[in-house]
Amino acid sequence: MRKNLTNRDSATRLSLAGGKHRDVVLPERLLNSIRDQQERSEVLISIIQLVIVSIFGLLYAIAPKTFSQDADFAPVPWVLSLYLVFSLIRFYLAVNRRLPDWMLYLSSVVDIALLMGLIWSFHLQYEQPPSFYLKAPTLLYLFIFIAIRALHFDPRFVISTGVSAALGWVLMVVYVMFSNPEDSMVTRNYVEYMTSNSVLIGAEFDKVVSILMVTGVLALALHRARNLLVESVIEGSAARDLSRFVPEEVAQKVIQSEEGAITGKGEVSECTILFTDIEGFTAISETMTPEQLIEALNHYFSLIAEPIARYGGVISQFQGDAVLATFNVPKPDPDHASNALRAAREIQSVLDGVTFGPGIAFNTRVGINTGPVVGGLVGSGDRVGYTVHGDNVNLTARLEQLNKDYGTRIIVADSTLAQVPQGLFEFRELGEVSVRGLNRPVRIYTLD
Image 1 (tube, helix red, strand yellow):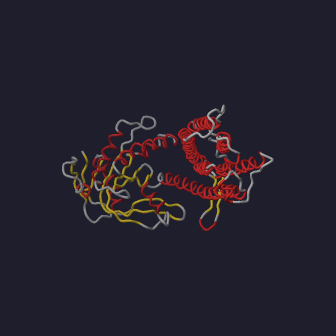
Image 2 (cartoon, rainbow, N blue to C red; image 1 turned 180 degrees about the vertical axis):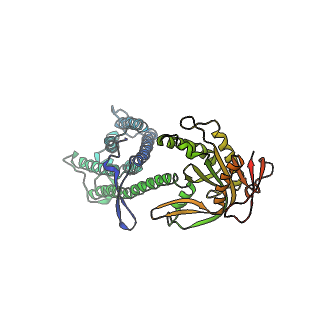
Image 3 (spheres, helix red, strand yellow; image 1 turned 30 degrees about the vertical axis):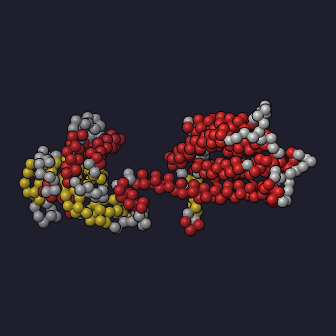
C-alpha cells in the first residue's frame, strides 16, 4: 500500500477559504505521514468487515429456518463462508500493509458482490420467487460498506463502492424482471407491491438513486475532508519544524494565534538566564577543519541541551559557540532559579572527560542571573526568531566572562541566590563587581 500515493498524488490542489485554490506539492515525508494514516484506516475497515460478517453469521444461526429441511444445498452459509475467507485475507494484508490500490478497488467490488450474492441467495434458501430478495432489509448494509470506505480518506474508493452497489442492485432488479418470461412480476400498484412478491420499478429506482446520492454526498464531503487532512499534516509538520528554530511553547502560540508569527509583541517576565561559552574556542577552532568544527559543535550542543531541557529550560539562541537559555520564559517554571543551577551543574558533569574532534576538550563557562526580561519574536519580513532581551540578559553574558578572572566555571548573581532555598546548594562568595551598564554593584558567587 506504500504506492497508494504516487508522485502524481504529491501535487494536491487544496480548496481554501473564500473559494481560492492552490496547488501543494507534498514532500515524501508528508506523503508517508498520510500513507500511515490510510494504512491504519484499512486495518480498521477490515475489522469492521469481520464484525459485519460475524453479525450475518449470528443472525443466520439464530433465525428460524423456514425453508425445506430436505434441501441438498443451503446457499447462505456458502456465501457467508466465502465472505469470511475474503475478509480474513484482506485483514491479513492490511495488518502487514500490503494492500495496493488495485486490491482496494477489488475489495470494494467483492464486498458488494458477496453482499448481493447473499441477498440473491435468499429466494433459493427460502424457496421463493426471485422478487422475494428485493424486499430483504440486508440491502441497508450497502450503505455501511459505502460509509466505511470514507475511513481511507480517498473519495475514489467511496465512489467505486457506491457505483458497484448501484449497478449490482440494477442487475438484481433486471434478473427478477427476466427470470420468468411468462411473468415479469412488475406491478404499478403500491399496495400490491407491499403485500406480495410483485416488483415496483419506482421503488427500486428510489433505492438506486438513494445509493448514488449517498455516495455522491459522502465523496464530496470526503474530498473536502481530505483537503483538511493534508492541511493538518502540513501544519503539524510545520509545527515540528518550527519547534527546531524557536521554543516549542512559542511554536504552539504561533500556530494557535490569529495573527501568526507577528514580530513586535513582547512579554515582560521574570526568569533565570543561563549563558554558556566555550573557553578559548577561537584558538581551538583554528586547529580543526570546518567539517570537524561543525561536527564537534553539534555534539557539544546536543550534550548541554539535554540537561537544560530536562530541568525545564528553553534554549533561546545559539550564538557561535555560546548558548542562551531561559528558565520560566517562555515555559512557566516556579522553581526556575534552582532548576537553572541544577542544569549548570549537570552541564559541567556531562562534559567531564568528553573529547571533541581530535582529542580536544571543551571547557565551558556558565553565567546565571535572575530578573525581568522581554521575550518575543524579532526579525523583519518573512524571517523571524524568538529571543529574550534586556539588561539582565547582558548581565548574564558578562557574568560568564568573569569566570576567566576568578578561575571558576560557574558564576551566579545574588538575584538568583535570593530565590534558591537555603541549603539546597553550596555557594562560595567571590565578592562584588561593577558591571558596565548597571548602576549597582552585583554580588557574585560560584557553585561548589
